[in-house]
Length: 343
Ligand SMILES: [Fe+2]
Image 1 (tube, protein in one colour):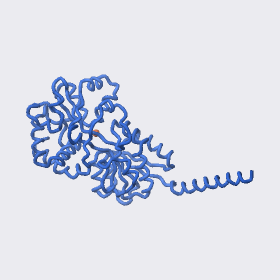
Image 2 (cartoon, rainbow, N blue to C red):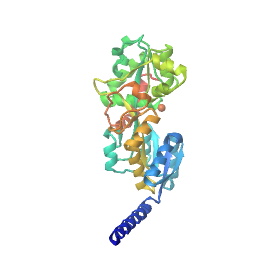
Image 3 (cartoon, rainbow, N blue to C red):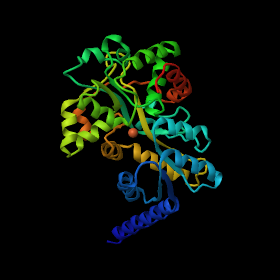
Image 4 (cartoon, rainbow, N blue to C red):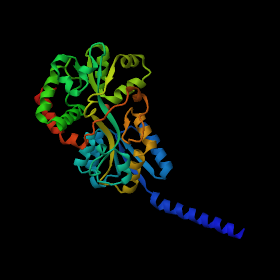
């Protein structure tokens, strides 16, 4: 009996010590600047708190505005981590000097290499594809199986796409430059522009709707916009998704062009360890599944299956081009689009 009670109290002391130890590590919180809306990210942050005991403060805003805020706050910024969408915003934050490099074997294990910065300044947390949509009554899928096919004069004036000032289109063209060089890409853009059904206008969803309404036979938009329409209970949206087909381009060669949402630890961070823990949490299976599904996106963790309405869009081969390169060629892409007359 005596021996047992000794063991019990030793165990009890061990628990107390562990708890005290945990408290010294976890007394801190993590301050988050997020371009992801509160209702999407808050449930995950609550799970993070339950799992680690690390509390959080959340400030939401749009990507460029949060970057501007970080820039003006400088070293005094309370932010430990910036969560934002589009690789353009992640690289802009790196270039503005508001992020710091972090290394973590867990992050390297969880996140595909092409979806993180080689120097550890930012890490992707979800991915999205830039997809071709078409009207099967007007276009044969073989005619638009590659982005390159969209410049074919035989296709005719059937394409709807938004303007060249849009970052998604700039990134697509930058990826073409990375694969084909400037000259070939400029030729492609010229042919592509000749095939426009109308002056570039409006947002991504409007291009999908324009295919459904017959204004164009081919449209370009990110995958999650179609996912949203698939999830919609609105009859008009359901009509759109039943009329329009999805083409995953370049499946026999380099794969479909991808983009990201992601995050990085800020230069001003005082809770670096907690910020890294949050990144690790968001890249692990539990959060990845929810984070991707809630936004109709895809996980960046290859061990996590696709979920939600986008599953209906089928599986695909993704371009493995490192997304840092997209930003490297952004300025060149903008010049190419301008020269080739993409307004
Ligand atoms: Fe978007």
